[in-house]
Length: 363
Image 1: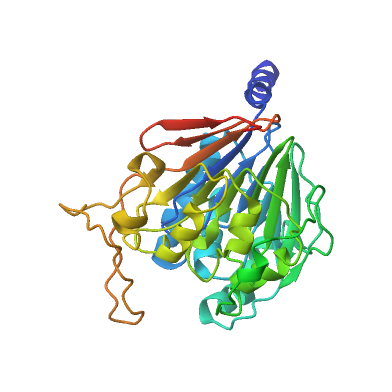
Image 2: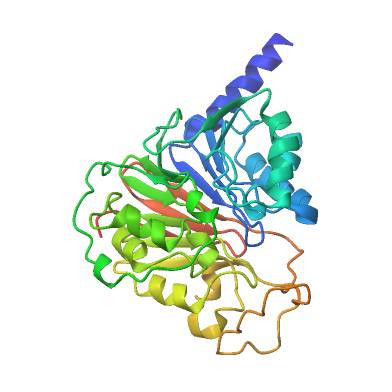
């Protein structure tokens, strides 16, 4: 028995030793968020847990599948960016499937709502009782082996000092136009990740006004190789002061079939200096053919595709009890996976069609 256990442990270690890359899974949770980082040593960071309600078991199952694909037995660190149901909704279900060692959030919910308030009062304390619980502060460095993860925004507060190599004047501030937002999105926990020369950032649903505070008049973040999330491609975020100033080579949008991918955002992203490609978790009807990317770069479609896709984007219906449901996607859910090397090279893979593209540093 001891020989068998030792052999299993050796095999487990060798799996992670064989991969010298930082692996990032952008998981399809139907317009919510769930992004998994795995270091070469096998230590993990998950940002958000997908949708609430009837969707929670589905999304938790999809996250658990990514955890299994990564060869993990647990989630070492979990960040809940903010208390909206499409970001924390699958947590209870996920915690019943996968051990979670540390829970990180921005603190109390500031946008009263029955779903979030009930969860924080009744469910969350039970889930975190046997684990570590951390309230994130800008400037915090997470205790993760294998890559550097720093909190740059949390609870409406921002890092005071520029990250190494950043701090230059942001030329996009002059044309900034403020936007409207709810109370909770600006509280988002934003995380900047460094792996050797590779840089990426996930800002939750941080809104335009907070983007301006973070990036103007000086750019406190610098540039990144990959911009993750983009608030599902919604126009309450994604101003040029952040998208263009970050100068990403690649953006990965966590949109849904009729959530995000809005024309205003698509124009901002596609016109970003130095952008090589936009990858999307879903085809969005709100983009139409006018603003979408080639299907090679889209991980998921809809169950019943139209016989002809209109060129013009489809306007989003008015919110309310009579709003028609978005196009269904109940089949296989595919993730987009990023494998980053210490020299700055990274490869993006669309697991739906096997299409991959490698981005070399210094271009």
